[in-house]
Image (cartoon, rainbow, N blue to C red):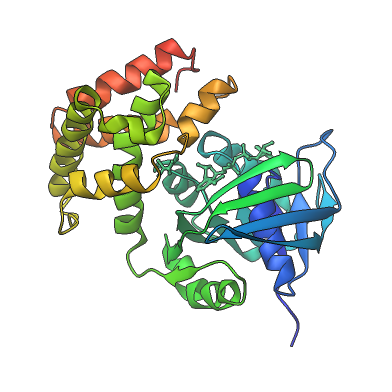
Length: 307
Ligand code: NAD
Ligand code: KPL
């Protein structure tokens, strides 16, 4: 049986991680990088599990362009703000029945791709792994998490199981998710509570347990709960504050992805985190002053482009 050829767009931390694991599982993989940016032909991936490190090398095809109608399975591993443009840039290479697998954090970018390209099968993945690059071709899988995989549109429903089966052959922990919208919201709620605050206060996740900051975490969770109720979404049994607290405590020594982006002077994903909540709240006529303030402060303090 011929193996699915996977094309991974975006040779950053998560793109390299996925390309590496897919290749290790025996799938042919092409890693697509930005034009003019050298990409490694081999990847050294180090995986930490219970403080034990194991390493493997993956051999990939790398490219910055693809021929017409040559991609049937595309993984988009860019940041949320680059996803729609990245797909537009590669659209000519997608086959008519192509499947697009989106790995972005937050919400809004996945829905934008699904709206723009209803003709393709759109799959979203909600990821709790942690990965970073130490140099070209070197990726550290620092935190083993779960990748919840679900269909975002009708065409996606038809191929979703096959995508899950393929991914289950890798060493990533894959969960088939019937309600990906709910899973994305649960993760969004955590990012709303943690990311903006840690960026503004330039603090570690665990430092959000300090009383003044924790008070703000609590307000952020209350606002998210109100919006999720308004959208008839399920709330976690323990409540959002407890869910966020567990993550804060479990990742106490981590720098959130948004803190890391601000330290490197990069565009943050605030538009797709607190910004997404503000948008949804406006539609529902619900006030979310804490998220609005975090959204505005991050935009202003870190000189973020207007959305
Ligand atoms: P990253 O910045 O390391 O990688 C993104 C890559 O996409 C960069 O190499 C960039 O050059 C590339 N890119 C952007 N536009 C492109 C285009 N048009 N064509 C080709 N390449 C393009 O980011 P990351 O950490 O890999 O994160 C990717 C997404 O996954 C984000 O939404 C992030 O929040 C989410 N995520 C990351 C992790 C993690 O541990 N790194 C975990 C969970 C979720
Ligand atoms: O997902 C994260 C992020 O940093 O984006 C958390 C869960 C906050 C871990 O740092």
